[in-house]
Every structure is written in structure tokens, then in C-alpha cells.
Image 1 (cartoon, rainbow, N blue to C red):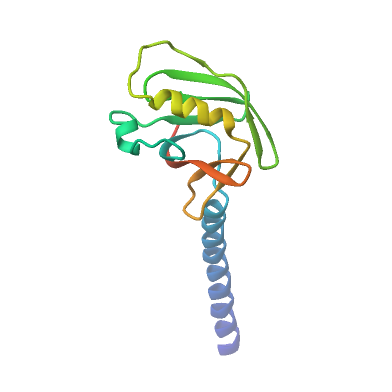
Image 2: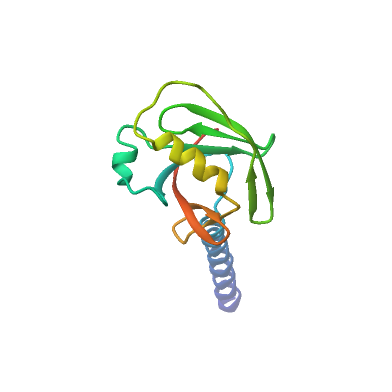
Length: 150
């Protein structure tokens, strides 16, 4: 009788610890494999310009969002709203011509962002889950995770 109670307690303990470890592994998987889609990504670094990042984007940082269902990308380039189509194959990404609103902007941030977007050939995620847009293997833009759009 004591052996069956003891074995039952051990069995319950093993099953309970197995459930907990599965949830921990699932959380690690989500962090290790961030999603590109349905998230508003906010620019926090751009390569190239000789102007300080905060000087280039003093009021609003550019954003980008990807939707998987219709291969659309879009966001705000610090001045105007833009959108277009993208193509992904493995880690390669190609952006189609973006349509944008035509509000007048000063400072060069919009042109820098849109020009750099046109040079991007790949994407990846860093160890913190930030989105990296690359030209070949060189990071050109880094975006931090903003909010879910769903």
C-alpha cells in the first residue's frame, strides 16, 4: 500500500514537471524564432547618413509592418505613409516600389529611409529579437519590436 501511494506521488510529480518544462520550452521557442508578421517594427538604427539618428528622425521614428496573407508591407517613413508588396524566399527579401503620401518633409530622413529600403536584400533577427534588414550580410537597418497590429 505504501509503495503504491509513493509511486502515485512520484508519477504525479513527473507529470506536473513535464507540463511545466514544456511551457518553458515553448516560451524559448517564441523568443528564438520571432515572427516578422503583424508587428509594427520601429526603426532604431540606420546605416549610412552622417547625421545623428535623432537628428534625422527628431519627431517620429520610421516604422514597418509586414502582412503574410497578401505580401504587403507598409508603415510611416517619419513623414509620409507608405505601402507596397514584398517577396520573401528563405532569408532573402525584395521590396517592390512603395507608394507613399506626398506631404512635404524636411531633414532628409524620409529619403534616407526609402533609399535604404530599396537596397535591402536579406532579413534576420538578432539575439534580442530585433529585426535586421541587410544588404548582402551587412546590417543596414535595425528595428525594435513595437506593437502587434492584430
